[in-house]
Length: 233
Image (cartoon, rainbow, N blue to C red; front, side, top):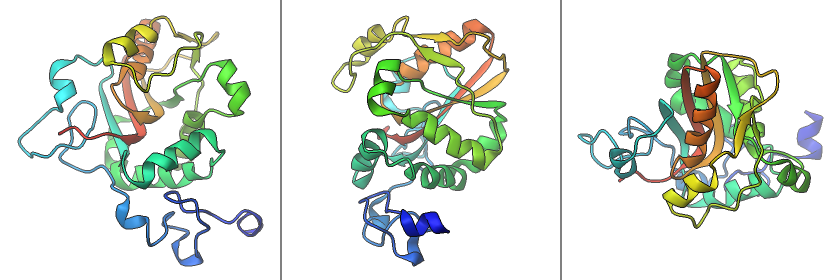
């Protein structure tokens, strides 16, 4: 393709131009062994990887009642994927989304088909951040997965509060920070089952807040998929 000549695919892990032999994989020979797909055993709620086959829930989900039904992450948030997710969010590396969506189907295709979502809903960003960044990384991921699954991507939720960055916040402060931060868009279409997409899962405060809004709107089943997720231990 001409676009591949003008804008050759880059390794998601290190951002170097990929050799032809690795373009379908999406990772260079150096990064690929350092990328960790999220596989069983998983927390039955959020989808964090667990060390024990006997454990059912991660340390967080054992003590906290999440509002969404179930979630999955594509990669572990470590190694090259930390910088990769930063570039996806801030450096216009939107092409990474195609690789992430393909791997989502490789690792969690059976789960994604089994939950039978009617639409994919990206976690929204506030208009102020959209103006600064020019795009919403969660929406980019959602569109890539929508193509893989032949599902509509619907901006069903709006972010009405320009919340503070949550990276260093505790779970309790995150929840307070997100209170009343979202609302359903005007003329929102009603579905029974939707799949929320976000780039990184940490405490689940964001998807919980969105789930509350969607449940109040009448949506019965809310699932989540994230580009990266942390350890469940």
